[in-house]
Length: 98
Image (cartoon, rainbow, N blue to C red; front, side, top):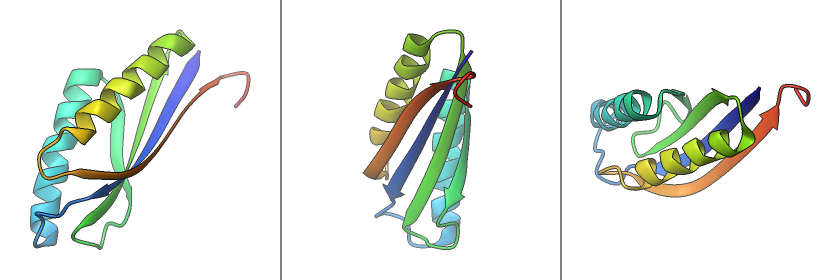
């Protein structure tokens, strides 16, 4: 078993309020969950209107598949409207490493 984890630091330049931020993140989160069948949540900067840090995780039977899905998630987040990627961290570990 392999566990893929991703951390994405985002800037939301079009967000003028926390309500705008939540709408942008809700749409992105729903699309990522539906398309890639992975877990995603806001993990930092909840109180800032133009910043967000999203955490993503996926479990797979192969290292290659976990890495591939995380790369697709990264591309999807980068292309999401109103979202600018500031940084990313992606890693895949095996259950023997955990």
